[in-house]
Length: 99
Image 1 (cartoon, rainbow, N blue to C red):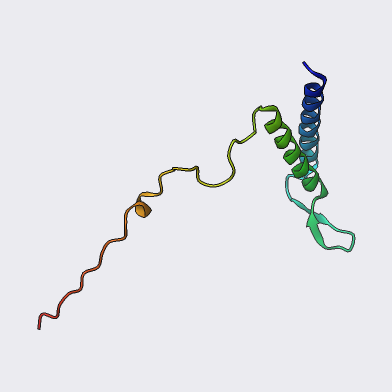
Image 2 (cartoon, one colour):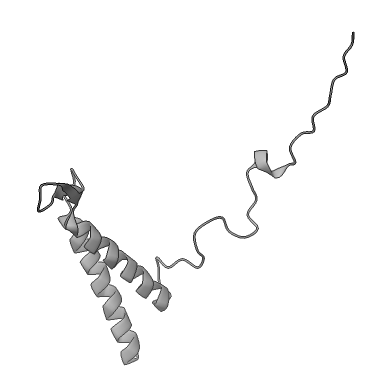
């Protein structure tokens, strides 16, 4: 294993560990806490955990290991649309006055 690969794996492992530790610090009953002036704010561990999750996903992608997606968000190219949207809308016929 090359030194660069060892460092990349170590960065990935540290990011995963940090994310797990930060998520463990977030209270299970609420995601909010009181800020310095008494207002409700998101728990600070959430931001740390989310940043570590992003870093871990980035490193996983670079390493080619689990958790890395090969495409961006959204419907895959060529995916079939829902049946009710696939066909053209029905044509309307005008009815003539029978009287």
